[in-house]
Image (cartoon, rainbow, N blue to C red; front, side, top):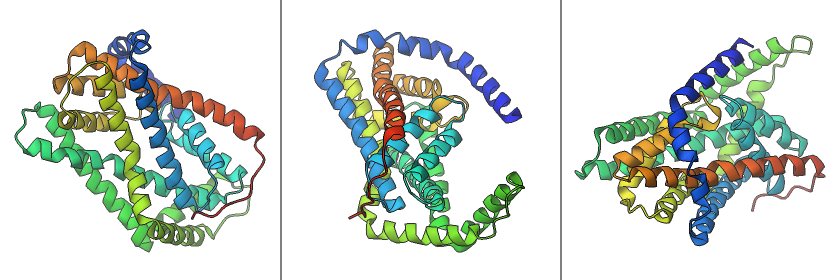
Length: 329
């Protein structure tokens, strides 16, 4: 209870600080509808492609070929994670509940989603790596952008090391599984204590590793393509508003904003994403008004439409009968 109170307080304080940026960005929503429909369709197409990439990666790690339960669970979880502070845990709970209701084993669901999260985070931090050549070639960039890129590179190294350890070494997996087992046994004292969690998690990790090895090229592509499609969507948003930003410099700005957007105090990073993205775009040379309109357009595609889709997914999942499983080809 105390944690929820502190998270709510942190979210409120954060909104106070980012409110001026939120106001400036979302007062441009009316102008979004006046942009050329071709640009808007292309932007939506990029965001849809990004979500399809996430579903395909989850199909690989969950070893379940069905699209609908995985897609609806991910959309609903994404919506849940954007409506409460530090909503990652809430989104995970929703997704696990929906996947298990669809017939996927609990251990498989939790292990698979953890693996997907690690791979997706590593894919997110590939962008700062891609931005390094722009930083090193002597382009005149604001020092703050360069610092954010190097922070992202350091984060990629850490995430890649953790992910590799979890996939290759047994000891960290067993240590994590024993911790989760203790938490489960303490929180459910009225139930019989579990002693098989480490063994089951380790076996599940091995199955995930085998599945990733069988689909290594597709897994690598889908791990980075969600963020890649996001970046292309932002470039399209800048084009739609007539901002002639250099794609390489915009990549530096986008990578820096992604680092800023990981602040967990507000639902889905709302406010921090807008503030980080507009400020970095302005530092990259985009006119202030163009930056606000481009970010408003980008957030309609990356936040608004997925929220609506998540609510629809919840409704559809409640009526859905469990179909037969189809193996991933």
